[in-house]
Image (tube, rainbow, N blue to C red; front, side, top):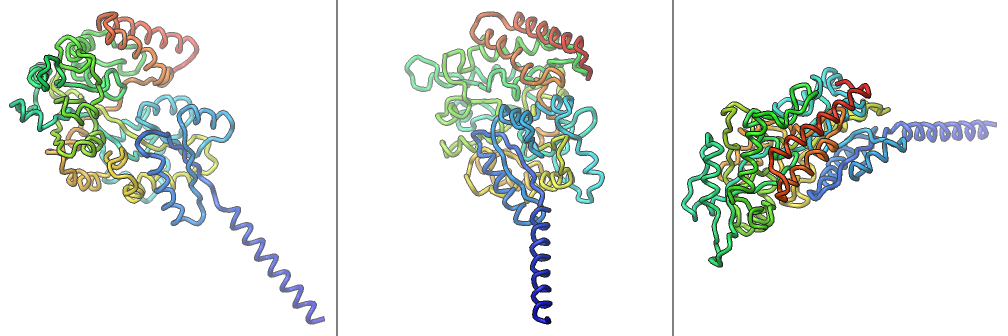
Length: 439
């Protein structure tokens, strides 16, 4: 009898242990993180951060899902939405917030004793906000500046740009740098280039002259306002009329390719591009300047930001756990994870949002003469204005890009393109408002 009781007790304890183990296993919460694919190794980088997070947390399993924006739409439509969503650049915040896809992070910040935002670049937060609420935490960021090839400037006997230089100064310097380096009678070295019409370059030229794509509440396009037209005409001159850009000579406009063969003096570029060039041309030395002062004066914003961030899905069933993953990936420790995987890839040569970590990285960049200038440029940076909460940024770009390309192809002048862009944008806004959209 005693043996039977002991066996029964042992069996009961075994069943209890199995039950406890099962409960423990099912209690582990899975948090999915959607990350956009790209050429800079971002998914590989975030996976290293998730591996490190998972090793430190027994109750949460963070899982990476990758793809493009179409894949994200598919996940949402199929009922398998991710808990955290990577925003490649800041332009999606308004439309995602307006459409109820993501949720503000302010309640998490208020209830969390961990000072997540302390020590971060402060100008990032307004860019990741909508209607006064913060919707994203940055993973990495960049700001556009004029990057000069020091060696080419020295060879041409040209002084590097003064911090208070003007639009006309830039034209004059670009002329001095544009020349035929091979002596075959064909211009093959150019004064200036950038990603023509890019959402993360082009709007900065409008701001410098007091123009913009939208009015303050984004109910009307100001693309053809006098200030915007002044900037657009200057942009047209810089690219086509003055003969200082590669486009005037039928050459590539890629700053990385041109720098690699010492064929461009100045480019409106980001910090990560410089690291890639150095890998191809070890003697490359760069100098960073603000964009030239336009007619709106030196206090006008003229630096454009590119911020990669993570935001939280509005209907995530695990908001507390998702918050833990989100703030870890945005921490110095989470950003540092995986930095040794692929030297000089985009994420490694991009910028940390943590100022102390950022300074340490920048001061190690021996190929930049004034690397801390990137921090100075961040003080007046803005996010792109090629966006709209109701229309969506992709639709705004679809309206602007074809007309800008017509200018590039010499089909129409810039003033005609501006008039058509403003008309199309305003028509789209009118249609959205007639359908009941309010923002």
